[in-house]
Image 1 (cartoon, rainbow, N blue to C red):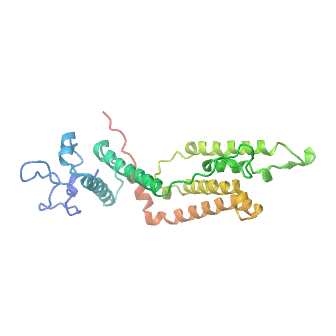
Image 2: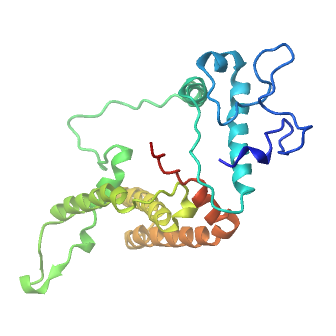
Length: 275
């Protein structure tokens, strides 16, 4: 962190080195806890200090964003490279209360939707009649769509125009290739970037993968889509390339306004201190 001569954190959001600035470590009038939003960087509050300062979710949220704002401000004011420790917040109560609030909101939304729009229960299946269209659960549509890639199964002239393997086997191998590529991506991208704008290529790969999962799922239910099968098959592989290219181009153009170099050094860790 920058040295302390840059001035303490003011309650009005600025910094200053003058003597009239209100320090965040100044004790309260009654001799109690400091009046600032967060303790200074060189002091670690105890559990009882944090508990005494906590006055609800609003206070915790304010402290959370005030510390983040102050860190960002001090780094932006530094003209040279600044190595620092990455400051964090205690699991209790800051992270726990925040995560519980977010989880409670989404659980409440799910309960609300399930109460207002209950799913329709259709008639029971007829065991003596095969359905006209057999489909797996919706979250397996992408895998079912890979079984319909028989147009890509080559017919080899050396085999007299026959295919090297059956279409079903080809679809199963396609599942293995896709799943294997998804599993190996984390090992290929070993960078420390945390935002898509810092790694536009891998962000584009992710967007293309999501779009491909959607298009291959639509291909799985081609009987229900009012588009010709040939056009649908072409769009299945064309749209991921288009969306991936657009994502890469947009993120590359955002680097300048994002202050790419500043944010890269902002999240670098300070090497461990030698004892």
